[in-house]
Length: 221
Ligand SMILES: [Zn+2]
Image 1 (cartoon, rainbow, N blue to C red):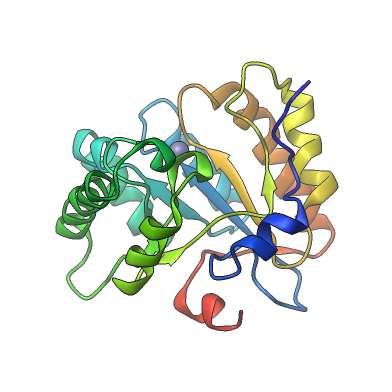
Image 2: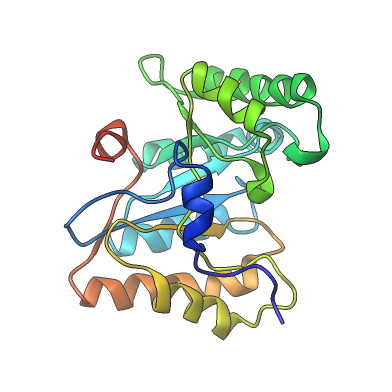
């Protein structure tokens, strides 16, 4: 039994209305996101598969991995995907003091910014585990970050999730404007490699396209 629901329960969205849980749109667009990379094991593969379907996505990178794999990070940018901050070392906001947490985000931000083209900014943030204290969120928003949560989880990271279930989680729940979470991490690679191509194929055939989260998409909310 998996305790985390693949589809976000509505009350969570009501509790935290200032965070971004989906994009309001009547168009057939899905926003795929990939957390915890870049990693040599899976990120390049992910980029190749996205390209086959002319899909754009958003990569929430940890500062630590950007520092370790700057070449893969550059490829994500060159392929036209969006970048988000996912902290430096993946702390759990609920268990971390606000001061320490913000310092961790700042550390990631300076590494990410140093590697982005000069005229680009990174104003997307996703809290690891989706766990962030209200105060942490409030301060990050005052600093100009959009806090990006999700509407659908593939739950690809869990050893308890079979790959068929990861696929079904997305096929069953994604719809217009959904923000879907995958992971380009080693841990999730088996489930993700199984689910992602089929998700792209399934929704492409239904007339959907896949876009990255941009200021434009966020403004429509
Ligand atoms: Zn993460």
